[in-house]
Length: 117
Length: 114
Image 1 (cartoon, rainbow over the protein chains, first blue to last red):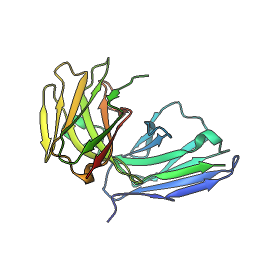
Image 2 (cartoon, chains in turn brown, red):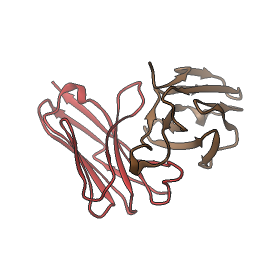
Image 3 (cartoon, helix red, strand yellow):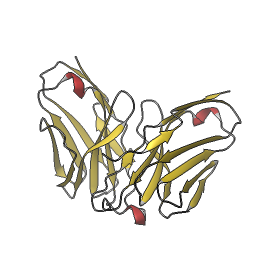
Image 4 (tube, rainbow over the protein chains, first blue to last red):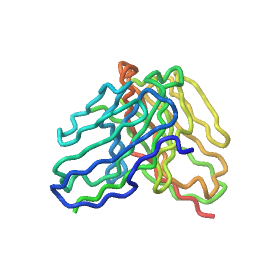
């Protein structure tokens, strides 16, 4: 009955490879996000999607391409991986953006630890 | 970009002690959230604050939305070993309500000695 799930949990790969991380939420939410947490634990938003439409792209290199096949899924594909891409990537979801109404509260997945060698 | 300054960076306390941490910014925020992250897990929402001056409790946790809308604090009373983790403040700027964008503080790492 996991609310927000991500696969894989760990991903170790060589520089230059292409990899994908999958995210699924079973909360019936309309909005999904990708965050990057660096080695100093700093969390920064990368993308947000609402009803499969891209809303936020926080100046992320175009090697990162999110894809939302439906409202319950937001996958992250990364091309030509670089050493600096090593981090923990979190998927999150919320009912909508409206924090004031409590429906914008974001629920996070367990994270995917990406290590680029 | 916009930043939230969270302090202290880390705390090592004895079980039973009270804990206080805060976030400040030079910008006004519409909403303040406090999350806890345990090792190997994603952040979990503890408390959400929506109005300036609001004081909200969740068990042993109490958080307040500063009157100036530029700060927030989180208190934990009578700490226990399972309080260990990283606590993050997060805020939403005016104008971000149609994007959902949250800005996170740097985190406060809490360790509790039994």
